Length: 197
Image 1 (spheres, rainbow, N blue to C red):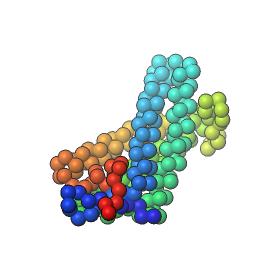
Image 2 (tube, rainbow, N blue to C red):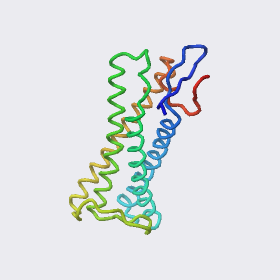
Image 3 (cartoon, one colour):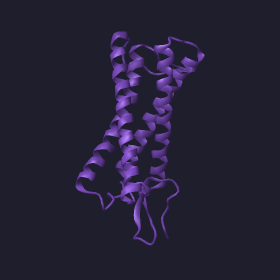
Image 4 (spheres, rainbow, N blue to C red):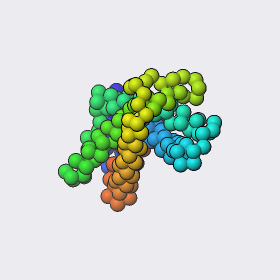
């Protein structure tokens, strides 16, 4: 199955858009990262800043750990799908600089979306804090080393903020293309698009 379909805008020639599978995976990652960011901020605030270790704090940490694994799995699936199914050609009106910037940001997003969950998993392995909702334990990636875990989790948090910065750039670029350049960049990933027959 091709990773993209055609969409026709206002009688213009058909433009390639990402397939429903690619769009679903994209927006699923968006939703998951949103929840991950929220739980990450809340759990650190309650557990580290306020030193409140109750059921809510534990559930926030468990949610963050469990969703981290889901994000990792979905991003790997999305990346494999992209590598095998291909992607639409770049929007024709993009300048060479815009193409390079777009590809760089996209691959940096993929890299961080894989590295951050693995870093978090390594950090909780080193701590160790592998319990998830009292239901199961994550497999340990390393032997306990609390001092090292603090360093790894600090890098994990820093990388998460870097990810949020890249996401802001990504969103800003998409809105710029939609409202200023008025090209088809954003439309290629919007839900509900299908082949114009």
